[in-house]
Length: 322
Image (tube, rainbow, N blue to C red; front, top):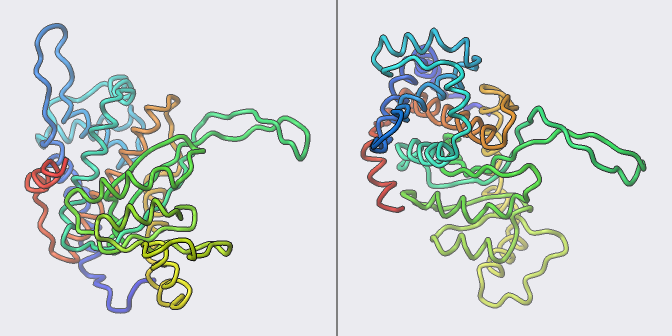
């Protein structure tokens, strides 16, 4: 729900100037990428320029052919040194090292909001693919076909919907298996006060892991759960708080809804499905969507909260914790 005192004037300015600022911030972020030394053989593509081109393609929602004119404009503005052929763009999406680079760029791009975000929420969503799989429907006793999908697991800052950590898995991977990774990677440079998640993440191990970082886990308990066997543990404390002060507990827990808002923002803006055929390309395509989302959030916060974006300083903070 939008507050009554929302700053529409500055929000409108951020949307009017978003594309130009997006291109500048994207270039500054890509400048953090180190190009490996070339020793022999054919000279490889410039990784920073290639990631810039792929992210711009994801931002505009164009095909690899139609984005060519925008790459030419970027070259004229000296954001890239070369206009890549559309086949080169598609081929680079299959690079496994790109997945690691994009995850690091996403996590670094969120750090300018380090002073704004203290509370976080974890959730996951699926992105559709063009592939289908056959399976036996036991109830109907016949073969069925269902669309395959990739699952995106994210940790969000609840105030701005910035993505602080991310994992991409097969569509049928359980959400809870990725929770520790999201918490740990969010701890790189962030002060975590609260972490909320739905019942699918509930386990003693997950609650204890969150408490190790000094944060309070707000994960609601299932109806068949008791706190009797847990002595002086975070499980027992949170269960008692949930049972005796449920309304107050749920106020904290419902910050998790901002994670759903974040996924809606990404899918509404950049699409809820991927076009690539191979799983590694699909993962990279999803990561590019999330990277574009983070930069768009930064553009908005520059106007609404006058934040200062210094990616070099953010990279130093990020690297110090890795």
